[in-house]
Length: 563
RNA sequence: CCCUUCGUAGCUCAGCGGAAGAGCAAGAGACUUCUAAUCUCUUGCCGCAGGUUCGAAUCCUGCCGAAGGGACCA
Image 1 (cartoon, rainbow, N blue to C red):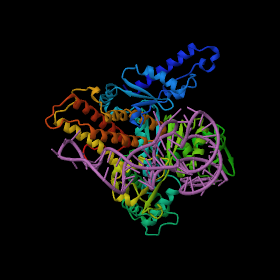
Image 2: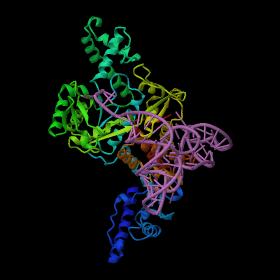
Image 3: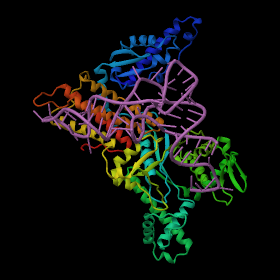
Image 4: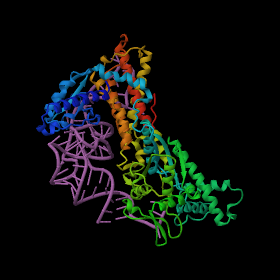
């Protein structure tokens, strides 16, 4: 019996009770006579932490007691009476103010092990976003330097979120918006030229080691002596070629981190294709654009922003947001129902104008456009914060992180925390390659499932028999309960856009598995005969491995067979 | 002044209407038998004060503390 089946039974029972109450109620009973709407969403089951509270618990009696003209414990007792008769239910207890604690028969609970193994990599998937087109934009760091450790967080979280959306049926495009237009790029180009000519770093330029490396590579591609070039031609050369090199580097480090984007969108293309003009013209037609102080404004205050925004500056240049207008419109024209953008907390001020822009186009903020804000990463050394700056070249890059701890530990430690919490990354701890990263705990659990499977095979234990009623040990009920949660966790992670839930969940599964391993053997001891208990436990072992593997997969972390 | 996020065990953080959790650190125990990177035992005015609710760590208001943000910068 799956949790879904159990909650369906529970729903039917409560609906039946409500129906009978209504039928027998007299008109002057008031509340009891009114129809009470009870849906599957009300019949949620929780898995209690405390095993004394059974396999599943429901608070439905407390929720509906008042509306059904009863007190919680009375209603719970009535529900329990019927639930006890349900196939697969071993025991029902009432506890506290009206909790209904349900214990399943071993056979009913254990059937799940086989179901998981048979579903394989698809176990945990759902249809929450079936067929929904989702554009997920993340990282989008300027190509003026390597991706630093702050951007890496969004790479890990964003890619994981994309995987989770896909698991619930979403048609996801991972997108990287490449800001190759504007003043920062000009500064980048000037910095390259300065480095190439042996001049000092410009006042407002970038000065890292990577600048001289890129400059040297640009010089190599040029047939002749860059020193002979007029300044404006040099600027263009270093801009175009330098950005390409920088961009290739960024792409490669993302790839090495296991993150590949479907679309790398160039901001510059929006200006070259006149998409910006078209977007502004569209908004002008809709009546949201006006001229003032020699500039062109978008009346975002009509849509909840705290001030109107300039879209074309008085010098005739497009403001940054103009690109955003065109970019959003482009995404919509490419057919994405949902456009999600992940930004760092330092950009939270963008939300108002972006949502207003979305509404100005006639779309629905929060549905067609959604902005996720994640807190920044705090870089520490010896307990002291380290300031990173592209200007003076003190940047800890994605490669530094990967070199120090590897892709798995790096990704895991970034995706394990809620995006709402700021995280400190201590460089010394990192380089010590400390073993306290829970990723090893989880990976070890997976490796252990594989070791058990190998040993089982060597001892002649196979999956030729399955008798779920044999899975009677408390740790087996506990493990089965944990395994049953994956689909719900995945859906919740998708709904709330919180990949860290998957990480926390597989940590719990790993713990439950280790405890089961400690108590229950899959392969027989010494000369013992292979029994159906061993065979059935192999199914459970393999189901646990499958769940951990699927969970790690959603985080982009490998599931090793040996450690 | 305004906005956003955070404040839970010694530390790092989960939980976000329903019966206070994990890892680490510290101490004590458990391997002749499937991986000891494991398991077992030991820790709390959920920042403070009100409110909503049958029920609040969770929702609302105020305060305190931390981080970030409020441009015709990107």
